[in-house]
Length: 304
Figure: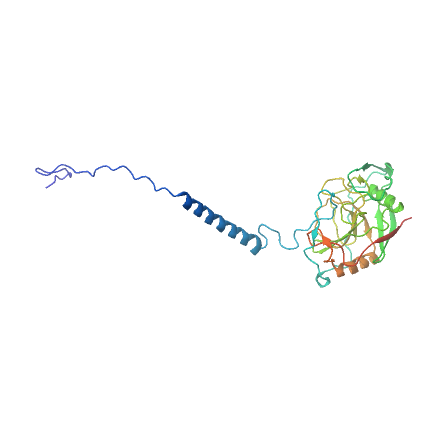
């Protein structure tokens, strides 16, 4: 018998411990097995990502209609023209009617202000025009002009209190005949970006007058129905001749100069153009906007 404390009793053999064995080395996975495991894991990951990206809108890509490109023009070197992704049938175009309140400056500008225009050799300018004059410009009063187009007349009221130098620029181009014969190359009917863009002498969004103008921004800028504003690139102070006419809703950042408004008959003309939608047979820029199905060419601009 063993003692109470567990030690061997008289005549019993001493403690017997198991013989120590060195631990067995871990099994090595063959290179072929590793390749197979890694490849299988990669396939599974790709399948999951593909499902999330394309089978579940909103993850890794924006829902349809949410990736709109705000009004702007693109340098020829970086522009990629791809077929429009939606024809935007007229039955899907929702027009708000009426007109939105115009934005106003909380603090009036000095009168006069000083304007400056910068030559831009890199901007395509198939129509040569003189730069508007640098120097003082009034920041009070309005100017009524009329766009004569192949789709109907569009009356505009240019407001010097909003953007005096932009008004000087537009009148200078109009009086030199720069806009005559140019097309409105881009219509967007998507909710959140409803506008018609015009003023490009090239006709594909890359053109300008050969110079740039300064942005004239202020807090509280909005782009509701009836607003006239300048297009530009993503860079500041890059506007030139392109402008856009707002006939619906626009959820775009306050980075575009507002310099006037559209009259009621002009909005009716824009509504008619918008209801016909985008021409799917012509190239757009890939965001659902593109050339309007109703061709819109400026045949002249009547100015005082």
